[in-house]
Image (tube, rainbow, N blue to C red; front, top):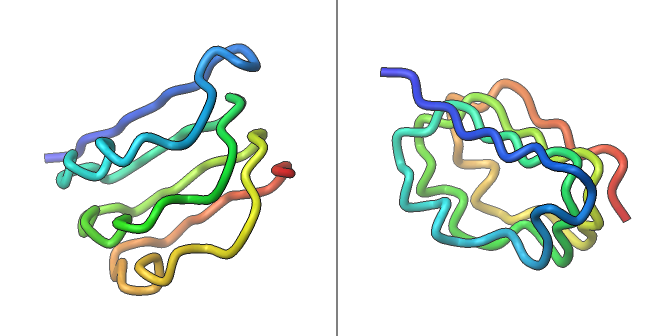
Length: 85
């Protein structure tokens, strides 16, 4: 079963840190957090999203290293993190 979470808002509609509660949605295949005002880094724990195929986090204010857990996502085929801080 495909599950997709899209949180695309006007700038500053969603802001602050990316909520780690998203990682409890373990059946997600696509996570799109584009065009918000998320700051900080992509939080550790992303490896819990074992079915994730797409990660799109463009147009935020994220910075810093990518979490190591990203490399363990075997189904992940597309990552787009452009246009961040």
